[in-house]
Length: 247
Ligand code: NAD
Image (tube, rainbow, N blue to C red; front, side, top):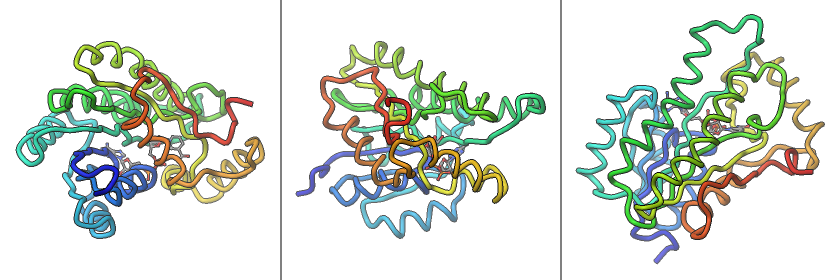
């Protein structure tokens, strides 16, 4: 029997990076884990790597109809959910002056609207005692150039952790947030060119008390703790950031 045997888990954006590391930790511990994402190729490769406890459902979190389909399939296939990791997100850097309305809406559609409706559509499946973990970011309490839209989206998510935790408390559901500092997952390279990413990463290492990035596995351990073990914590945000927002 693994630590998470008999537990049903859903991880949005679980095909890569932090979400994948959470999935690996929980599958290895015996959980049934459903990962979601937009790319069938990425999802199939992730499920192959994760092993028999992992399953994938394709869907875009910014589409409420995709989230309704996800909820319907989860209800049919696994029935109930013990832990929900609202992890899908994008992290583009855009200069304040040149940020377009479309770019702004794209970030908020995925990072905020996507997270809100993920919780709303899946809430009926959450068991008494379930844990919801939202992936925020240290950006929500920092003032990093080029991150105004992203940081504001994560600050909105941090706020949701507080309000949703109050609203779901009568059902025995806890809602917390995990706030990663820099994690080397490739998300920066997917959002900016190679040189910009290298410079951004060098700056993050230089300012960090631990002088390094986190591994996705270091974030996964903390996220799993919030979902399953932190039974007297709700509405909180846990920083996994090398101390950059604390020291
Ligand atoms: P990642 O790009 O590997 O993971 C993001 C995942 O979200 C991907 O699997 C992607 O396919 C999925 N996704 C994006 N848009 C989606 C959509 N519309 N619908 C469904 N899935 C979608 O990068 P990561 O670093 O693992 O990021 C995971 C989370 O951690 C994000 O919310 C990110 O903002 C947050 N975060 C990352 C860092 C970091 O330094 N890597 C720091 C703080 C916060």
